[in-house]
Image (cartoon, rainbow, N blue to C red; front, side, top):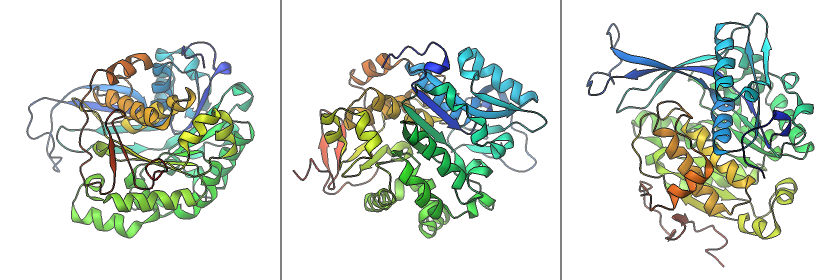
Amino acid sequence: MTANGNGTSETADVLVCGHISVDIIPRFLPGDSDSGRMTPGSLIEVGEAEFSTGGAVSNTGIALHRLGTRVRLAGKVSDDFFGSLTLKLLGDVHPALTEGIAQAVGETSSYTLVVNPPGTDRTFIHCPGTNDTFSARDIAWDKCSAARHFHFGYPPLMKGMYDDGGERLTGLLQTAREKGMTVSLDMAMPGKGTAAYAADWAGLLAKALPCVDVFMPSLEEMLMMVDRDLYERTALSGDELCESVSAETIQALAASLLAMGCSIVVLKLGASGLYMRTAAQLSPVLAGRLPASTVAAWSDRELWAPCFRTNVAGTTGAGDCTIAGFIQGLLLELGPEDTMTSAVAVGACSVEQLGATSGIVPWDQVQARIRSDWERLPVGRPLADWRWEEQAGIWTGPEDRRSNA
């Protein structure tokens, strides 16, 4: 792969598709002890706001671009102020990034107010806008014939991707597969009480995942979608979900998702790192994209990559950037250990800046930082029967083929 990030989108290696919006991120003042308390009737003084494009299309797409990958974006905005701002912000990164964005007339573009006070998790106030009406008609498949990989993000925030039980989403994923692309899918957490929250996600995933090579949701999203009782019990307890759920529960969840038909499950665990489980036999499309020796290295694996220690400025888009690092590793035909390590490294770069992609640096700089004895964080739970691989900086699980060889 020629990883230069330049050229027209017709030569793109990756087509990133799905949800796009404008993020409005107020900067909280340092040392303000009241900034985390959003009490009714109060006034919280903040600094300047950062405006950036948000959503999976922008976050994962721009991160891949900054890493050095040739990318085409496919999303939908309107002809209103926020739509024009979305296109301007994308064009400021690189003019070619705007070429695949459809622009509707008379609709409302998507925007998100990101409330990210220090010392607490962020809150999103979101208008889905044109994401709800996005469809296959908004993708110019003929303009991305060179693409090797298709990534779709945030269907729970796009009404047309879930209100028919996932038929349209599955059709998009199947089209990408038929065009010879490997496919990855990311999710998002819908608001409680919304139509998306009430949707039959287990049924939708059963339709969609046979068309997916790499499924990369968060642990929280998957518990909400396939184990609602456990998710709601944990939420009521007030415990931090990614730190309180046992390794055994994570393993069982990943196994159930693999059984639905995808080749690789990657669960984003926040500060606890990244968990991966792979099928014994990869899909023909994915296996055909990798050298034979690399196919064997990816089959029947179970790995857990700890996060890198860093100074956190903001976590918006960190999961999307982690996905970009994982996709880049696949494109470069790296083994699973190096791909997982690179993914959490790109995610760590993301959180060092307030904007989702502001901290992303070229791939060779990420790799140099990994080689510089960058400290890792603990995974936050006991890993019984797991083995620490010192050189790779990875935990190998009890279901890993190499551990049992």
